[in-house]
Image (cartoon, rainbow, N blue to C red):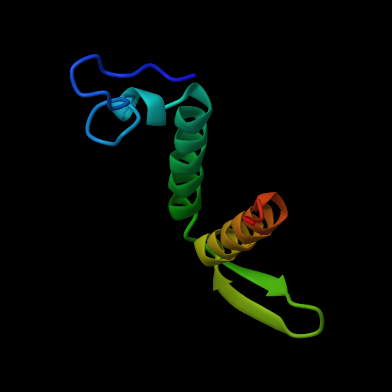
Amino acid sequence: MSRKNATTGARGSGGHGGEGLRGRLTPGRIAALVVAVLTLVFIFENTKEVEIRLLIPEVTIPLFLALLGTWVVGGLCGAYLFHRRRR
């Protein structure tokens, strides 16, 4: 059972579950945010042009675009694999 406010009979405060910002900033979320920021810093620090083979064609692009593209594709794959279906 959940705790109810004795004066109003309502749970929590303001419909936020009573947790506020603390409930949303879990250690796991903070770690993920730190890793994401460090990854973006790493990506944008690498601006040298590189040659990349995309199956058959070879293209020359800035390294940060290749890294950013790989990061986005990885994030989309992770989101797809861990997406919880709602019924």
